[in-house]
Image (cartoon, rainbow, N blue to C red; front, side):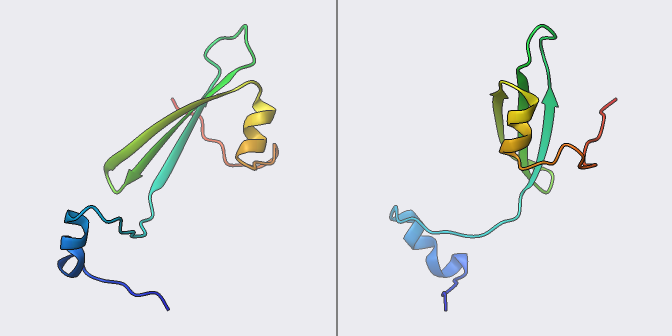
Length: 85
């Protein structure tokens, strides 16, 4: 069984440089765009947030849409896409 603590109990541990871990549940919003119509390269931007606070932005390029679908384990018939207007 794992032991969990409050910040009051382990704050000094963090202050001494020791790593501690906690679990959180961020939301990942993934945008996909083909920036250059002369290229098959797809740019993906992942915005990670907890509540209304952005905690990170990651951008990556995929040579084809197929590679992107494979990377995210998405079936090409999956109805998960939303068009931004």
